[in-house]
Length: 223
Image 1 (cartoon, one colour):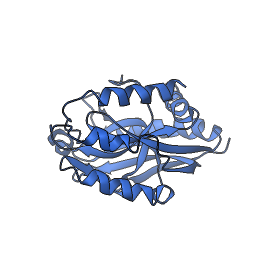
Image 2 (tube, one colour):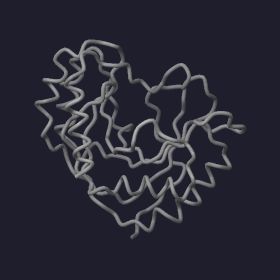
Image 3 (tube, one colour):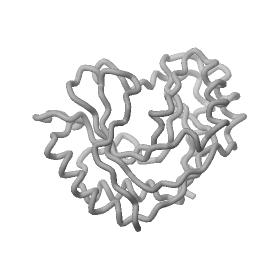
Image 4 (cartoon, one colour):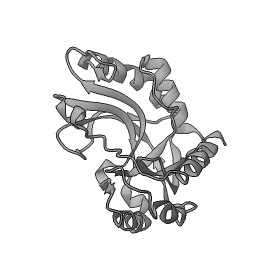
């Protein structure tokens, strides 16, 4: 109920915005790093959301300030780990040894969880990105909390964790225009359901906008 209320508040807030914000992750700072960026996530199978996913993408693509996420990049973030480098000097950097420590701890904790279902939809939006609500009876949030507790993640996120599947980022500080009205037509739409049977740590190359999510470690959910 708290999660659903959070989505409702985000939607009501978005309807008050007059301008979109540039939400691209591949900023000059992102591209300036060597190596890769590591995250723990749940992949989302695009096929489970068809044909409505592509229909909605075509609607969003009609807005010039929208950049659509491709199928291979669809995921639900559980924990951002950081840029992998030998000598971390920032809060968003992690050493290979620390990354492997996280994997070891996660490998012991995550398989204790049972597989579960995720329902995706309706459409929603932050000021800088369009996304789908996640209905999972709080399972992603519990996985996120368990990972932070057991793996001793020291970074403090800017916002409270809320699972979501980003569909597109906005690429300019542009007027909202008809975006809110367009999203409203999809606000109560159910896009699809899929089973979560594993969680992954993946790495992303920083030299492209939507790199493949390269598996680093896979944790089956056995329960």
